[in-house]
Length: 640
Image 1 (cartoon, rainbow, N blue to C red):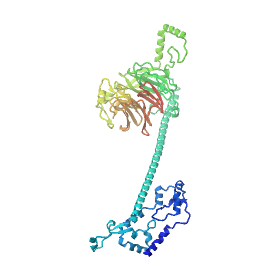
Image 2 (image 1 turned 180 degrees about the horizontal axis):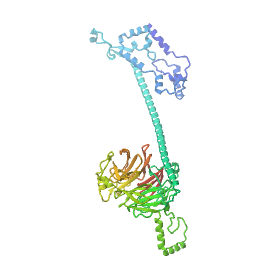
Image 3 (image 1 turned 90 degrees about the vertical axis):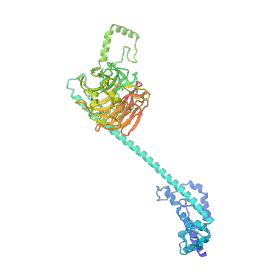
Image 4 (image 1 turned 135 degrees about the vertical axis):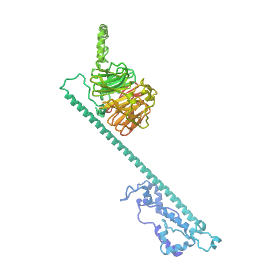
C-alpha cells in the first residue's frame, strides 16, 4: 500500500504544482479556474485572481495572433470548459466496480504504470478503498456456488459520504454547463435568425428595385410607341400640306398605346387639384393629354364643361344635348359625346366659347353701372338679334349630330374616322365620322339568342340568371346596384357598359354579364366570355388582355388568345370605372379612394390624400396624370 501511495502520488504532485512562469490574462481567460476546497489548497495566486475578478470582467480579452475572428461562442466554450464526459465516465465506473477487488486492481494498474489513464481532470484517482462501503451479502447469496456476474451498486455496496458529495457537485456543475451550452446555442440560433431576416429584407429591397426597373422598361416601351405614332401622324400631316385644307380633320390616334406625353417628374407640381363647377355627381369625363383640355359632365347637367387643365379654369360649355351626357371621348381638339337623349354629337373644342362673359364683363373686371344700363337698353331694342347671335355662338362648336339609337347612348369609342356606340336599346352601332352615317348595327339580343363560341370563366354559369332575363327582355333594362361605401345605391339602367375596338376586332360588355368579341366586317359575335354574375359597367382591352369591371364587385382580366380568365380582382363594392396598362390597373370601386393595382408587384394601394369626400364614379389617366370625378360633384387632378 505504501508503494502504491508512492506511485500514485507522483503524477498528482506534478499536476498540482503551480507553474512558475508568468501567466498573462489572455492565458488565464482561456484556462479553466478550478477553485475547489476539496481538490487542492488555494494558493496566493488563486486569491489574487479572485480579488481581481471585478476588474478582470471589464477588461477586453486580447486575441492572440492567428485566431479566427469568426469562431462561435459554443466552440469557445467547448475549448475552455472541460468536457463533462470524463466525470460522467468516472461515476459510471464507480457504480460498476467490483468493490472487494478494487484495491488489487488499483495496485496492479499502478504497478504497470496505467494509473494516469484513469485519473480525472483534477488528478484524482477513479476510486479508493475509502470511497466504498461494503455491504454484507445475505446467506442465500453466499450459498450459491456459481459466481455471479457484475452486481448492481445498490445491492452490494454503498458509496461514501465524500464520494456522494463529490458526485453531487459534479452533477450540478454538469447541469450548469448544459444550461450555458443551451443558452449559447439559443443565442446562435437567434443570431442566425436575425441574419436571415436581414438578408430577407435585402432580398425584398432588391426585388423592389427589379420591379422598378421592369416598370421603367414598360414605361419606355409605351413612350416609344407613342413617339412612333406621333411621328407617323406628323409625316401624314406634312404630306397633306400640299392638298386642299379641310375645315375639320379627325385626328389619327391610338388610345390603346398612347405613350406618355410628359415625363413623370413633370407631374410633381400640379395645377389646382379640385375643379368644382358641377353641382351633381359626375357621369362622364375625358381629357386630351396632361395639362391639356378636359371635358366633364354631371348626372343632372346636359351641358358638359370644357376645362383648361394647365390653369384649372373653365373654358366654356358644350350646349346642344337635352339629356344627361353618359359618355365622353376627347382626342386632341375633337370631342364625341353620347347622351340620354339618344343622340351622339361631334364637337370641335377650338370653337368653344372662351369669352366666358355674360354681359357683366370678365371675372375681376370693373364695370360701370351706367354702362350696364346702356347695355340693358340696347338689349331691349335688339333683344331678338342678340339672342340669335348667342344661340349661333353656342352651337358653333357642334359639328355633327348622329341620330339612330332609340334609347340612351351609354358608351362610345372612336379611332380615326370610325366610331362605335352602345346604347340601352341593346344595340351597337358603327358610324363614319366624316359622313355622319351609321354603317352597321349589331343586335346584342340576337347574339344572346344565337350563341356561337361560348367560354365559361371560373365560377361562371350560362346566362340564365336574373340579369340575363332582364337582358333578353325587349323592355327597359334596370337592376338595383349593390350599395356603395356610403350606403347609397341607384337603379342601373345602362345595358351596354363598355365598348372598344382595334382594327376589325370589337369587344363589348353588356347587362347580361357577358363579354362579347365581334367581327366588325360581318357584324357577328364570334366569341362570348362568361364569368361575371352582374352587368358589366366598364371595359378595356389591348393586344393580349381584356379587363372588365362589373356590379358583382370584381374585375376580370381575360386572355384574348385563350378566352380564359387570367386574373380576378375582388373589391368590397361595385366597380364603375377602370383603366389599365402594362403596369397598373386604376379602378373606381364605390369608395372615396381610387384603387390602384400594380400588375408587376401584385400590390394594392389607394389614393386618398386630399381626395374625394364621396365615392368615385369616373376616372381617366394618361402616363401618371389622372383625373377623377366623384359623387361629391368634384373633379380631382392627381399625380400617380
